[in-house]
Length: 100
Image (cartoon, rainbow, N blue to C red; front, side, top):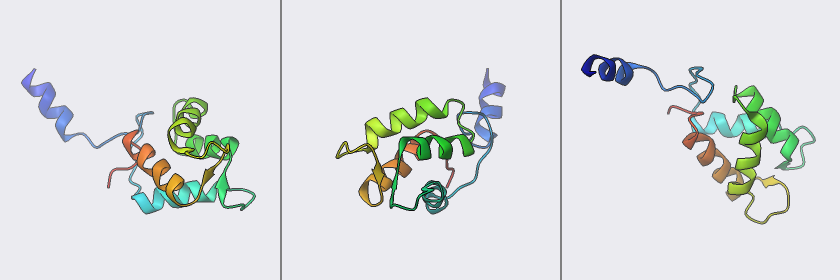
């Protein structure tokens, strides 16, 4: 048991799919902003789902749905740039999508 704990503690942090990632918070934010395909300054559900798919989420639809429940504070159906985007980045970090 002690050996297993030692091996696990030296492993790099993995995202939920088990793929090592190394994005900073700023890179993660930029990744989400890159998926704002119509450049309207906010992310739709489909845009966010595509971003989580790019990030190798095992279940991007579910991840997007949970992100909306947590981050869409004004409930307008979009993740707006600003505080909602910051909340989204924090949520993604909690889910293991960044290691720095």
